[in-house]
Length: 104
Image (cartoon, rainbow, N blue to C red):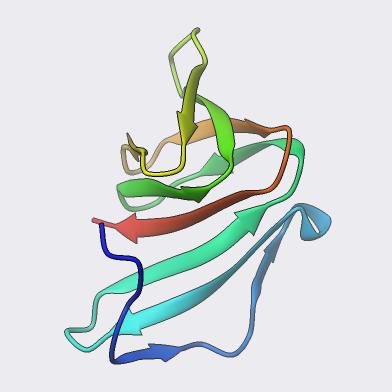
């Protein structure tokens, strides 16, 4: 995956979730594709999805458990995981986890 996005628009207002434990910004690419770029601070959180998502790790690591699964899987920088639409996932971070969320 690319280290940067060129020719994008950035939504000024941050997306702040879980009392600031997750903060991201929406970027809109020239073709209209939307992504979020953010960080999850040390915590254990549950996210619900509308559209399918690909979570790309940029820095740090996290443990993830997809809805309906019993096992946790660890992901680090340079790795990604897929989350189905209309689903959820648990994520646990011991240190800041930097990510890009690609919406399918």
